[in-house]
Length: 456
Image (cartoon, rainbow, N blue to C red; front, top):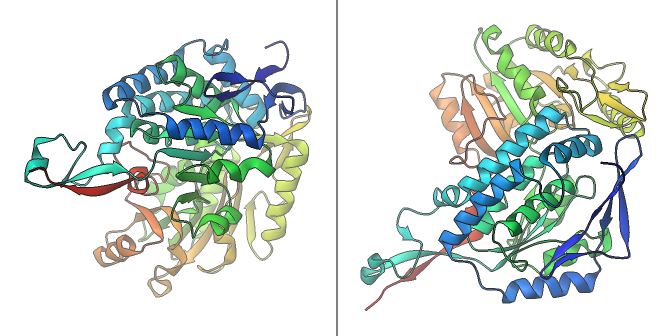
């Protein structure tokens, strides 16, 4: 790339370049792209067109999704080679390029599997179409709760764009408001979807400023919104909005054999650059957590500081000022905890206006220490002691809990706890995923409903 590229909005009639632009910069401040920001009226007209558009037939959707995944991962899309796309995302987001490459492959796989993945959520007593012969004797038919699905996307990881593909597979028309930090992934993906056969009124890209953002939600039937606690507080009570907030994923180690699980802990903390909601933020150890924490800190300390575009980079980067802000937040909230790694700071300046965020490992003295609920955008983990007397209270509010235990009664309690979304048993990293296993329940549980049908 020789200069800033134009990232147009993608409306029903094709690309749309606006007067109001946002300059997207790399971490060092150099401009990389000009992102068109659409006004409120464009959002309203675009989404009205999506409401009026008919859904594509299911078999056509499945074929087009598969083809779009191939284009996204291998072809020149919108005039950009996949290698240039990956390099650009790494430059602007600070994500290690190996993570961006892995996410590219995952998006390709998710597109190919999107329709089949939705079927895992379909109730066994329901059919997909009223024409199914089983409806003659009475059946539930699985139907959409609406027609238009909106997404307020996050920019912390390209993988967030795998999930909404399932809405497209189910026949929803989808409107994506991209992250202003990293709009390249959704722009490339939606362009690939259109090249693969989806019409402009089936899937749109609506970059907006903050004053127009809520219009994207208001003009949809259902929406999914990524963000922090403020997003959960704002939308948590809306049955038409699915908030995707902090993961606060955790590991519980019981018994005496912790040495054989250090690899899984290190991987759970550092995979994806430590930026994902499935990265481990707290480890609870039955007994003394110090030896485990020390072993993990030793391993994490050996990770080299490398710019994110380096093939062997593991750690994420931020602008130098952004990294210092994160460092200050961490150290301010670590008061009372014992630092094994990162106690003197985590921002490692690269000398080009950016800084790598190095790992942090802290020990707290009780299971209910408030720090165990702090989730950071880099490898940062809090170790705490845990005993049976502490119960499952400290383990609540987890997207993923990996529990190394053979206590069936404890497992029963973890399975029954509604604030723990996923329970992995044994030496399984918290970032493990599969298309047939729900992430934060199946998205189709939110998008679909059953409707009783009988034909005389």
